[in-house]
Image (tube, rainbow over all chains, first blue to last red; front, side, top):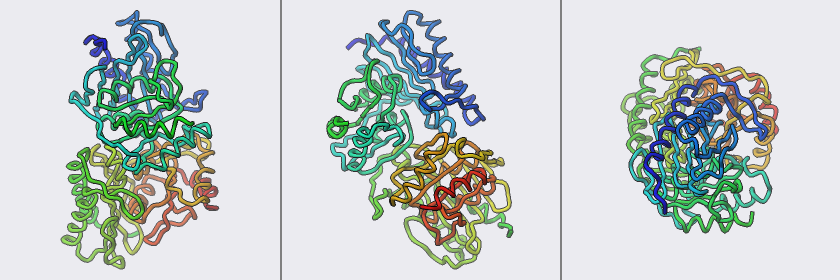
Length: 260
Length: 260
């Protein structure tokens, strides 16, 4: 496994710091909300944060590629590609819930090798780097064992994300078998899974920049993250993910989802 | 409207402080989880917090009544009755999400006249006292105007709380008409409504101690909270609530829910 150069880790922290500064400035202020083509909300805070992250990449890493939510894609064939969602959980941000996060991911030749999940209001940051233990605020963290669905604590952002009937049916097969389920949370749920407080995260209707940054965080904490067919996420991935803290649980959930 | 004596307001703060201390001690520690008859989780933290609140009431306000989640009811015919849920949002607590709250309510001759919503990890406290503006961390807060469903931001803890088909249909009528919806959050959603970041909260499967503390907080911020038939909550209330920051929105939501 290739080593991620330390200056790239430092740069990922710098990107997360920059996004967090903007979020702290706008959080719980009255914000005009636009509605995008997919009916999801977007604000000046999302746009300002992404523009700043792009500017930082262009200035300091001009040869690297970029994929972001609001302003499209550039140089996706570069050796290193940054993917980011400056505010994952825009609805949480708008509602005043401090669970939205900044997601920063780095791909090396198409494979996710670094991920940051940052909650700027709470001062919480997860860092995953391929081949290293995931760090939560600088200290290693681990998922917890959970070999069976009947013991599992499932998180899902919204039942509205399952647009197709077979997706909803797949999700409901899992939902009906777990011990507890909690809704809301967006990518923050994957951070809690890496800390060992959730066992399973099932989501749909995502984009590559929502998923790729999570992979090194979850894998470095001992978990697994794939799409609903069990494939590792990549830039061309579909929009559905299943993450589990325990590989046995991942297989069981996958068996119920793969039919969808 | 009767004035709430200032020593009762001080005592409500003291109860919230005591519960918060216990929550901060247990939050994000490995906790054994029991499952109650209604399939909801309960932990040692819930039980310890409620036992302490009851002990404080018995010691300092021996003539007052008490209604809590874990240990039942005493002296509900007293002039003053305390109702509390020491950890509202036990699933959030277990998942490591700092959105669970302590709810403290005070009834005078059966009417809710004081409510506290406290988030001990974030250091956020809402205080509502009948006839006074609601305070958020000591400063007055207000709901925002939102006269129409098509502009409204709705919150609901879980689609699983609508056990009966007609309840679910009522909720889905509202859901299909609002601008945005967010899931999760429990009683914290009512705090965000009082701050003007959400417009509508629709819940079912609640108990009086989940709802009564919210009434003075929401009314003192300019909002309305009733059951799905438009009745003010009381100790014998049913388990469904609709809260809105704008009375016009409340009426519109009620028209869609009252058939359920």
